[in-house]
Length: 569
Image (cartoon, rainbow, N blue to C red; front, side, top):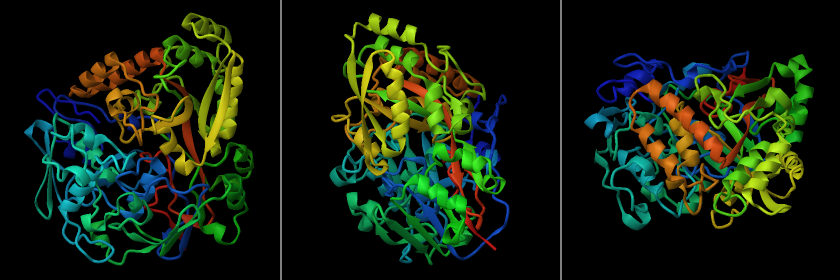
């Protein structure tokens, strides 16, 4: 979120706590608060006790807070296993966009014109073994996010901390000087430029604590050391994860997490269609279960035509855009005209149908979802929803790419049907597509290996916080690309004009101007077509009849907020 002011950034703590962006000279609420509908918590009060079951078609890619950067996994990790310096309120709709203290006593104290941020930890914070959480542990985890040994996590700290350009993490280079911990409860971040929205960064798992003595590097994914309300009992990767209460977690220090169930069981490796059928049937333990992944599109009719099941169905606007990303460094995608041709070739209506039709999301005509463009969908190219085959063929001819051409497309196993719809679209213009599918637990690491990603990929991006700055730079700034664990800029798009404009917008302090500038840059990048926006998706989820407190949180792409889920009385 950008802060409107005439003399530099105002105190963001005031703005986010009030849920507004107002400052000297006026302002307006963040775009994400101005559009979309919010799901409401499930009827029926949830009580303390019982076992909540989460039915999943996949293992977690990463629970290590340094590497955790997919929305459902961040939600799970941050609500159950670890706490960050600040967090979001556990509320549906616009209220859930408000940043509140978590480990810290405030949402941060700004000085030096926004280039220094200081956080003070609460007293009485403890890990699962009763040892104290100290500021050095937060510092250590932020430093871990620079380590090439731990790729794939949020890169905001790497982009803004001073003197970090050549820093390679604590395993190789020791401590980072721009993070200071003068005592056990104080942590200071010194930035290379003013960042008024730094408290939004501090909601991310990067800013959760990891004690150096407990760090097992790449194996930390398998057993994180809990600072949250639950700890890991057993974890059989790809099969089952069991959590029990962290008896040293003090609810007096944590008003956000309700921590209602006594036990949480995540059953993995199930077929998604089977999960949905079980939740529709609502028998036995499935009455106190929820789905982790999206309801499959072909199950929508069974849910929406049954009033009792529909009452347990949640379909929150996600603040996300499904895309088709192309590796712009390799032929034929190194030809802008060819990439633009594919924009016209895709039948987005067919893709939308595979996701469940209009109920699953709107056809996307820009990268930014409407929540980040003032609530108004943008449409620069004016391409018909089913595509424009004649225009696509003309652009292919203009590109000089010899036809027919054969290319690879990467997709997770759950997206095989969607990938087939794309494949059929491209056949219409002479492009043959070889579909390669991967289990969701390894899909992002696979396409994030820049030496191996050699085609297109079904991908998507969601806002990390309600601002275009959490969208456009992450997807299209060539300076964010990493060799392994590459996230966001999967298309490997390096365009100097785009990067210069990103820098200019990030230097703005006037909210309305920055909002508009991100929208305008979105339109300019659409013409260069490193990715193809497909659908502005919703998050279709289903809960058992015995689950209470269920709603889709607006930050975590409409995923159930695990902070409030419980078993009904």
